[in-house]
Structure formats: structure tokens, C-alpha cells
Image 1 (cartoon, rainbow, N blue to C red):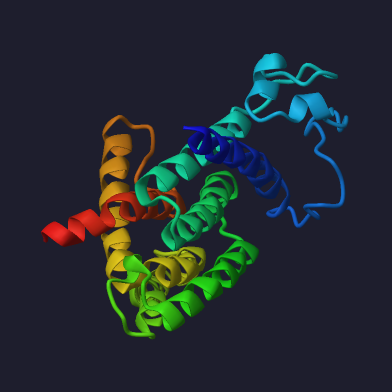
Image 2 (cartoon, helix red, strand yellow; image 1 turned 60 degrees about the horizontal axis):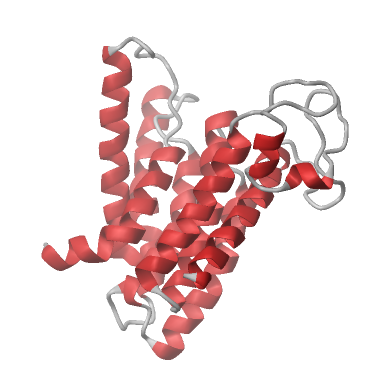
Length: 259
């Protein structure tokens, strides 16, 4: 129980850091150079107000200085990250899979919220994901016990990198030929599958792609039916990839076991 609490609290703190990344990376601002500030008045956020979730509650969702409403993104990212860390730990326990998925899911959380806000997936996040995947790859090479790969072959994660991303690359290329500058698939989505494949292997990576397409189709249909969007509206695919990766990370091994 104590370990669960510590994992959850660590996830909340990690979520607070992810909020800084979400705010600064797309604007190409240094992450560590200055403390958080209000996006409206520029006043420095006090230390007591930076407590994950509780800071937002104590401020009643408003800046202490200018009283401007604070985006719900901040407590949402913190809570989501805390829950993801806890659920991963509860699913895999004290294992290499837990460390790997906690890192991957944190990167993907930042990517999803940036894509929702700015319609981009920064290369820096993709590179960070790939850098974090290198120890996982080496662990698999030397111990061949990383269960998410479902393979003892040393090249299994490399196949994972090029499987789903290769399919999306073909979709992007075909979309470019048809629509010219307005391709059907952004390259950020293609690149996002590189770290996903490196962490999850080709089987779970392909499952992630399938689930992402299904989720995107269902949500898009619902939004069109209720006229929230029209046929020309742009919908970021990154968040669907991230949601699918979460589902696959938790339930993929079980689903593969019964197929």
C-alpha cells in the first residue's frame, strides 16, 4: 500500500514536470531555465502553488496575482500521469516492464496534449522516447526477458520500430500524392510510432495502430453526427495513438494470449 502511494505521488510530480514540457517545448523555450509563470500576467508561480493538483484546488483554478482562470490541463495531466504510473506498477509490479512503460507513457502523455493544443508532435519528444528505449533494447539483447516483445530475437524491437511506422509512412506518402501539401497523415504521427515500436515490439505496435484507427474512426463519426466537426475539420491523430498505446500496454499481452 505504501509503495502504491509513493508511486502515485511520484507520478503526480512527474505530471507537473510534463506540464512544463507541454507549455514550453512547442514554443522552443528552455525547460529548466526559469520557474513556472502565469501565461497571462507573467508572475512567478509560488512554490506552494506548484503542489500537484492541490495547488490548483487551493487557487480555485485562478492565478493568485491576476485571477485569470488556469487551464484544467494542469491538474488533468498531473492526475493522469499519477494514475498511469500507479496502474502500470499494479499491472507489472517491480519489473523492467514497469520502468519502461512508465517512461513511455509519460512521453506519450506530453505528446498527446501538445498535439491537441498545437497540432504538432515535437521531434524532441520522439528523440527522448528513442533514447529511453535504448536501455530497454539492451536489456532485451542481454537478458531476452522483456515480455512485451513476445520474442527472444535481439532484433524484435527493431522490427517494432519499422512496422506500424512504415505503414503510416506509406499512408502519408499516398496522401501527399493525392492531396499534395495537405497530406492525409502527419509525419509526427509516423515518427511517434518509432519509440512505441521500440518499447512494445512489432506485435503490440501493430495492435496499437489498429486500435488507434478504430478509436479515431468512432470518435470522428460521433463528432460528425452531432455536428461538432465537419468533414473538413482537422483532427489530430496523435492522441488516438497515445490512447491506443495505453490500452495496448495494459491489455495487449492478455489480448494476444487469447487470439
